[in-house]
Length: 101
Image (cartoon, one colour):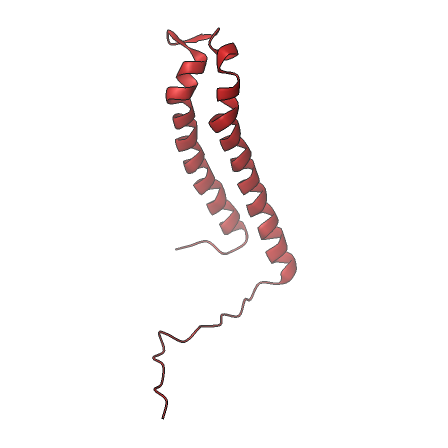
């Protein structure tokens, strides 16, 4: 006689109450936000470093801008991006009624 699986091990199937058009619109906004964040990340993560010599001709707080962006500026932008992303995603979630409590 096979052993019965406990309820916590059985896969749970959750039926969605969201119609496909709403789900597609939600995913469209979410993926648009994701691609925007990826592009900003790529610009500040890689793009700045490609133009560091040109940016070094500009001074910011007494430092060459290329050096500043590589050492501090990119990190500041990344932290701001995290907070902006979370806020924007929460707004999208609220718009479609799938926000967390």
